[in-house]
Length: 114
Image (cartoon, rainbow, N blue to C red; front, side, top):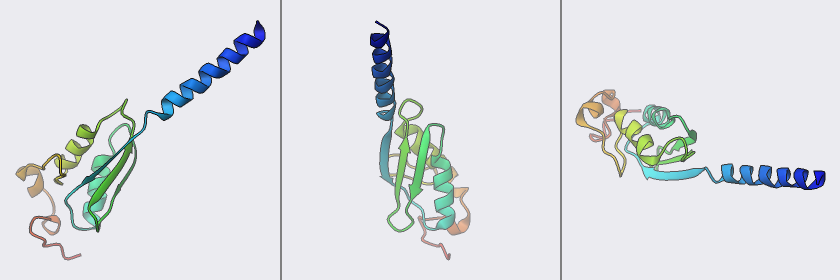
């Protein structure tokens, strides 16, 4: 009986770890920006509670986010990026948020000089 209890404990522990590993999701979305200053801002904005890893590629403009769906969701992450002034394919930044960006980061005008 003692062996059965220990064996059951090991099985349930393994299943618990398996369930937690399934609590990981990845999103990829195109986010507007133009430079390394934008990269830093976009990545910081996307790093909300529940996000494990963020990378925005300056050349391709692809934002990749690895996160826990039990703690956050795609909409929350992209909403935070939009609030920082950067539009994605799914959520557009308001004009007010866009206009808060430094002049050199106004990606709609392609005026970035760095």
